[in-house]
Image (cartoon, rainbow, N blue to C red; front, side, top):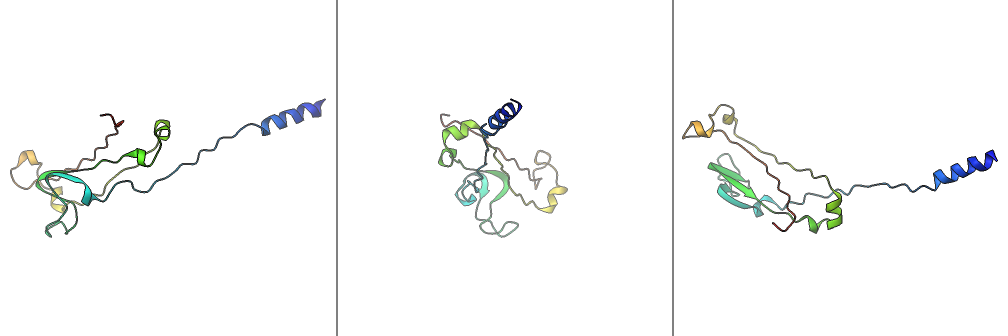
Length: 126
């Protein structure tokens, strides 16, 4: 009897389903910055003085770079609704003078560079 009970528990524990989640990691989904929309004093051309040709640069008036990525090109709606981790970031190179320049509201000349990175997730209906 003891062997039968022990064998039953052994079989019951072995037959339990085990779910293993394996994450899918995508490459960078963003297009190159040269295809971003720009506004204000944002350029992609660079002028050679502090910004090399082909680099994204903003002038004294500041500017905005923006783009849209449709996650449904990479994931199903069910995968999106199940949740996901999103890693994002940017590298910003600023002139060394920004450490000592006043903020822009305190001067009419050269002022500190400020950078904001905004991520907005939408459901496609807005």
